[in-house]
Amino acid sequence: MKRYQVVGIGNAIVDVLTQCDDDFLRRMGIEKGIMQLVDRERGEALFAAMGERRQVPGGSVGNTLAGLGNLGLRTAFIGRVKDDPLGRFYARSLELEGTGFPNPPSPTEPLPTSRSMIFVTPDGERSMNTYLGAGADFGPADLDPAIPREADFLFLEGYLFDKDKGKAAFLAAARACHEGGGRAGIALSDPFCVDRHRDDFRRLLAEEMDYVIGNEHEWQALYQTGDLEAALAEARTHCEIVVCTRSGSDVIILSGAERVEVPVHRVVPVDATGAGDQFAAGFLYGLATGQSLRTAGRMGCIAAAEVIGHFGARPETDIKALFRAHGLI
Picture 1 (spheres, rainbow, N blue to C red):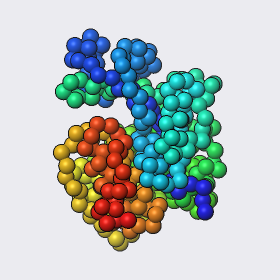
Picture 2 (tube, rainbow, N blue to C red; picture 1 turned 135 degrees about the horizontal axis):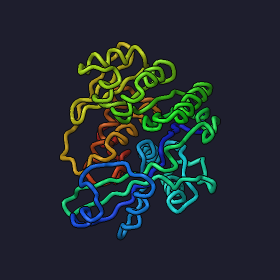
Picture 3 (cartoon, rainbow, N blue to C red; picture 1 turned 90 degrees about the horizontal axis):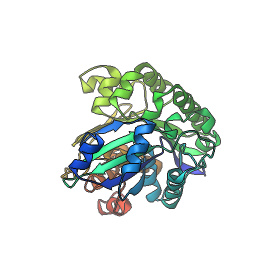
């Protein structure tokens, strides 16, 4: 038996939340209701200006692995954090949620741990200011190939594909996973990231990935077409399992000649943050436990629906109990 059922690699980001009013946003020059990247100086100024803070471990694939750990799978998340209060918090939180964090916080890391400073106004709007920090510089030196070699499934975060060091680390991780008989996959993460690295993404899919998860905009960006079906038809020639989420419409899953469309149970969204991350958790839980593609897709949709029903990117109820209630396990 492998040591891990799922191993993920991504940017280890701590979400730091505080409540404020619109006057505070204006004084600090924070644009309301959007996510923007900030540099180190701006990030430290905003962090210092926050009132009562609440810290939550985040990051796209980090959220997915936390979901899988809570579902009881043997999991590990590989990321890069500094040995500072946020880095120690991140590592400790994942371990408490059942997910291993094999890279210890580094005392020699020059950059602070990645953080997203989220200002929540009384109307529920979340204004996010993200400093990418240490996690965004993940590279081959941060990877112990023995970890993905011991994984049934490897899951990569497309955002980290933005730098050459990240690309090299992903190739090394995917090859180690395959050497151990595992299957490697990636979340496309963002259409702008896809635009910047289209040729490299296509090559990665064709040569190294066994499954890929993306939304309709990301697939269309990857194959430079407004025709989703044309994009997916091309994708299925490159990759064994192709998954396309569509913001409230049926999820499309393709594998060889098989096509599965999984209906989405519509709910009134409270906070869409983390919906894609938890879809991936449910879907990967299905794959890792030997379910059909249709059942895995349904599990993904159930997990996503739960997380958009409340604030925060991680489940607040027992997802496995929801699977049982729907007759999936």
